[in-house]
Length: 459
Image (tube, rainbow, N blue to C red):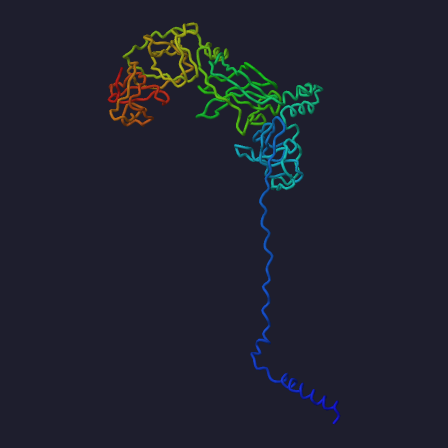
């Protein structure tokens, strides 16, 4: 047999077992081959996190900046800012012409004209709230001085605006002024109070507020201010509405020139978010009434006393006179030319001794004056009462260091109208007809109130 043939036989015998083994049945679990592999989990894309709202800071670079209710010059002014104030910007209009800001200290949210501040950062990063979707018209003349000039130009009267008459140097000097006001304790003279000094960079107002429980009360007077420094400014006030403490507040003149518009465009001038408004105290005297107010009192005609004799101390009066005006003169006779003996204040109460023949004057019992004195009937309110007149003073003695109830009438059934503490001393006007109750004044309750004599030590 040839050698080549032998080699082929050996080779065939070597590979034959391998071919046979590959055809032998599969001995393991066939499910491992037939079961498809589980698909890999598909990761859903995560929702993008809502970006934090962007806030920026801005610095006011005009003298007086108005914060408006919406992004429009036609909307109401809700606050004011001064040059140098730093504010937080929280939004913008689409065209970035207006910025939504938070007024410092008071937290008011409003809109300002973007060109009047220096913004730190990119305004495009600010969000556009729903109330700022539309581009708004610019607010012409955000500073008070520029606004006044614009109003005069639009009026077409041919007159040059006050600001245009100023030289550049004068305008720059006024713009550097820091708004301020100084006022001292004083007596009201002829219906006026005096402002020692007021400084404003543009037209404005000094506004006098009465006190309301330690805060700003109603406005009782105002006076216009020219740009610059004003000293010894007299302000007419409503003396009848004045309180012991008053507030002198700076306002802008942002609308019609020389017309006080508040509530409206003439808003308070703010410094660090608060009005510039020092408090001061006043006193009311015989000289406090203005000539007009004095004329009102002096129009009471000259009359003669009633033919009936006036009551005397110890008699029973049927009337109590409650003063209804701030300052009322007490006279020796029922006539305007009579001697002025004293002054009385609003809310004070006095027993009535009688009336003039025409009832234009009321005779009252007055402390430390023996005979009845006279006041104008038109300036008091009469209240019915039964009182045995006996002017004096009494000290509260509860014996327990507590407080004594005050009642609206001389009876335990009468309503309680107030309390007075132990050891305090008050003026008394007299007693009830049964002598069990005394009428007290100056207790803090309007008019007069009754207290049991059992708890009073009379002087």
